[in-house]
Amino acid sequence: MSNDASNESEKILEYLFEPENAEILTELKDGSKPLSTLTAKIGISKEELDKKLSYLIEKGFVSKNEKNNDISYSLDT
Image (cartoon, rainbow, N blue to C red; front, side, top):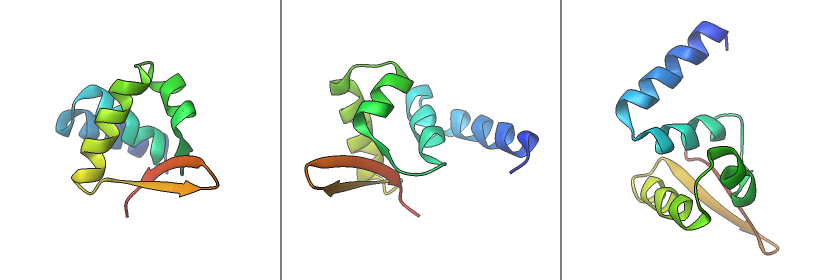
């Protein structure tokens, strides 16, 4: 994806979602990420991130994947 298209996608996400939710979705566009990585990149508490991820899962934007005690999140396509 070109840089201009990527920036446009991020602007659309920011318009449609709260800033942290847009940031979560932007982080997940390149593939599945563990909760620890998202917590470090987004810069909010694990508890707050968990609430936001639960909302995005409920609305059908994100999937939660569990394997061998590892939990990761991805865009629900």
